[in-house]
Image (cartoon, rainbow, N blue to C red):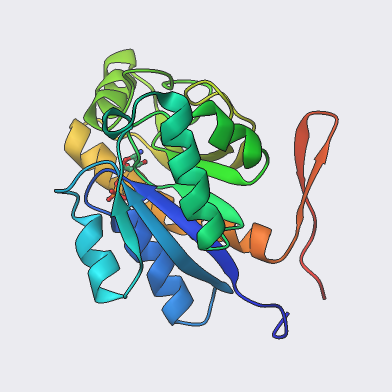
Length: 214
Ligand code: GRF
């Protein structure tokens, strides 16, 4: 393990970047054999860009409307991913759709964090506060976070890791979001660690996690 080079990860972001910070913290503590090789942001105002600056992570602001069509946008992304030798893409609060050719090129090598227990409370429009509102309106007694593989739809790829949190009677979308975010910060770096340790297998459409070595 010590001899394995750090896994080169790209993070795709749109917002504040607390998940990116959680990943970087694990790396800095020597608990995750990875490096953030590239950040792609869909917004020039994303707080995550400040994290990139602090840690000298190469960062690029890229959106589909800068390109003639989706194919050109996908090509530009693939070029950056190749140039930075990215092995795993992590969508960490990324609100845009990733072009199909990137999804296909990184099949089984792209993950997303979702702030609910999929397949409930996922899909288009269910992001951020909307997710927690929907969970509370339904009257759920638990919620949680899901790390899943990315396929061509929103939030439909196979789950990789999930963790529950209780919903409390007095919860607001904000208090529930904060409890869920704390587990996001645990399971997203944990999922990257599974890739870094080559412990993920794909069998019969299911994700299997191999036990930790001795
Ligand atoms: C997280 O709740 C994530 O699950 C969702 O967007 C939020 C991003 O937070 N998709 P941050 O930018 O990592 O702080």
